Structures are given as structure tokens and as C-alpha cells.
Image 1 (cartoon, rainbow, N blue to C red):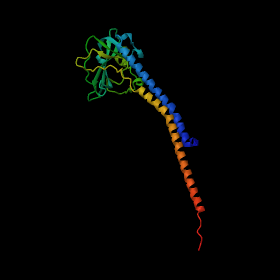
Image 2: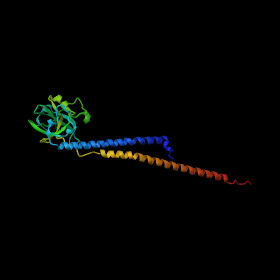
Image 3: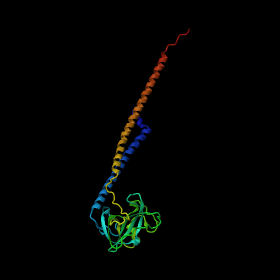
Length: 277
């Protein structure tokens, strides 16, 4: 009754089913790992934001890559803004995640002569993207900035292409190594995402705190993939049983037709031939 499984069609169906099961299981674990990464990142952000503020020089140094565990730590820095080397970072979204504009990036010169990049916040792009926009003036004199410590941006990590040939004082990525070449003084690795003081007129618009409550749909996707993997053998069995039933019914119908045909032939053979006159 199951010899049909050796047919070409059923061999292909069976092989496809056997291939789908491990693929779906692997995809489920991939989503599980993404869920675990998101949970770990949320915990890191929450603990970093809750930690006591420290001077920026305790975490950053010129040419040093910021360790991942120091991301989002609250730091303080005191110095004077170097507005002559201020730049804007293109194609950044506002807090509503819809409006496109610039981040205002201004070096802050520390007491020892070194500098640190400060993302002072977001401004609208305006109508002319080929010119340096009107940027709210940075505070004059000595200031103390508080903010979140962030790692240098790279294309590999951020996915943002470092486009060349941009208008003067416009950049795509916030990277202390690249800005050191422009500023002409050593800059601490990474940059500060300013949270205080808040601008008196609300401009630039401070970058909001990163979301660390949402865990996303990855766990649900993992469960879905595993359910799909479990459904494949169940579906295969259902199809096999249906094929067996359909073949059995077809065979029974053929047998019944054969018996009817044989009976009709027998009746014709036994029918008496009428005598002639």
C-alpha cells in the first residue's frame, strides 16, 4: 500500500521535507539568539544609564576604542567649545523618527588641551542641503556637559555609508579618529551624546534616551519557526495517509467496475438464443 513512496514525486517531497526541518530549527535558534542579544543589550543600557556619572577621561582616551560595556555610561566633561571645527552629521532622524535632519557635532576642548566630540542634538535639515545650516550657537566660555558615552561610528557597525564629496563641514559618521585630522588636536575616542544642560530654546533637540524596554518579536519568531519544523513531519504523514486512502478508493472502484463488467459479460453468455421459424 505504500509502494507509491518510491515514486519520483514522493521521493522529492520527502527529501524537501527532510531538508526543511533542520533549516527551520536553525532559523528558530537564530531568532532566539537575537532575542538573547536584545535582552542583554537592554540590561546593559539600563545599568549604564543608572550608573553614577564619571569624568569622560576615566572611560575615553585618544585613539582608544570604547569598550562595549562602557557604552551609554553617563559622563561629564568641562571645557570650552571649539565652534570653528563644528560640523553637522547628515541624514539623522529627530525624536519622532520621521523628520530627517542633522546632528550638531562640536569639539569640547578640555583643560589639558585634549578634546572630546559632543553631539549637541538634532536640527532640521532645511531646504538647501548643499550649504552649512543655521546652527544654534554653542555656549561661550567654560561649560560642563553631561551625556551618554558613545562609541565611534563605522560603516561596518552602523550600516551608514561614509559618502565622500559632501559640502564643507558635513559628514556622515561620527568618528573621533577622522575628526582628529580636521581639528588638529588629540580627541578622546568615542563621543558624548549630550543630555544636560538642555538648550534654553530647545534647539538643538537633544537625542532621546535609547529604548531599553522593548525586546522585539524575535522570541515569537523563534517559536513560530520551531512550530513550522514540527508541522513538516505531521503534514507529511497527513499527505501520505491521504494518498494511501485515495489510491485504495481508486483501486476499489476499479475492482468494482471490473466485477460489473465481468457480470455483464457472463449474463450475455448465458442469454438463450431464440429458435428460428
